[in-house]
Image (cartoon, rainbow, N blue to C red; front, side, top):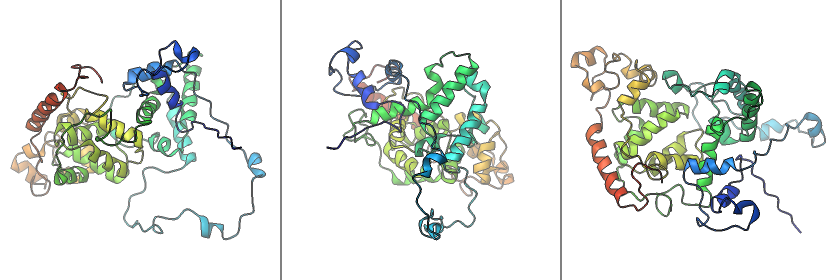
Length: 396
């Protein structure tokens, strides 16, 4: 006969086990047969997910790296023309034009991933105190210790990341077990993986049992302006330009452009934004990408639709001098900081001095944010008031 062995390798935990625990009374998990309570559904709040993970044993430790000695018996003779026939094709061989391209921001491979991990863990003070860094202009630029694309492609094992972080924390804190929150980046990933398990429609609104059905507008022209970074809002356009050029943007930048596209300003379906991210983000991951878009559009997981990111104010608070905009939208680089986030409000003399007249060299804002946001909040209020699960300020 054939023996099938199943292992979880791309996640820390067995997701089926988490779903099983979510559908059983606490006392029944270890001692009794499964009792179906939630119809086999995954935990749909991060708080519930954390509570379940707290009851699980630690993830399996990663296996040690294979040595040359272990590989010795597996070797076969390599032909002299091996590279000619089997090497990784270049971009040119794949049909891409490379002339004039800037050097890649993200270098692929496990060696690069492990080097970045070591740099990440070298920040021992951060690990020991576990203080979240305050976001500023530097935070918005791709970091040499960034790890998300490497986790997405499996260049970095999530278990290697987990245990390196855990062991360093215990060393610095004298064998004190680390709080679950230390592993936030990994746990949010696991949460969305669990939420997407057994739900083939997780990446769409129709037929998705956990997604609020919202009558979004169909507006291909507005969608294209957003995707191409031509909305007329420099903060939004700079973010989308960075995404197109580098394949990565900070998670709060993702929040800003997702809110703008969906419930904040344009009232366009989160599915459309998800597809653009799927195409452009190096760390785009089916479960995390779809789950994040549902979250940010208030289609699932999150109900506080009255909180919107202002496409002017949020950027100004994050990068008061506007250096991020100057980096990715050089057409606006000569605007003073006072006007760079809302250049349409600059006097004509200032625009001419900056050699960028709004409406001629850079587009006017495609919507009036205050009015669009107010109207969309009204729409969301009407939709949510019809839902039996709506609990005001709570979570789904």
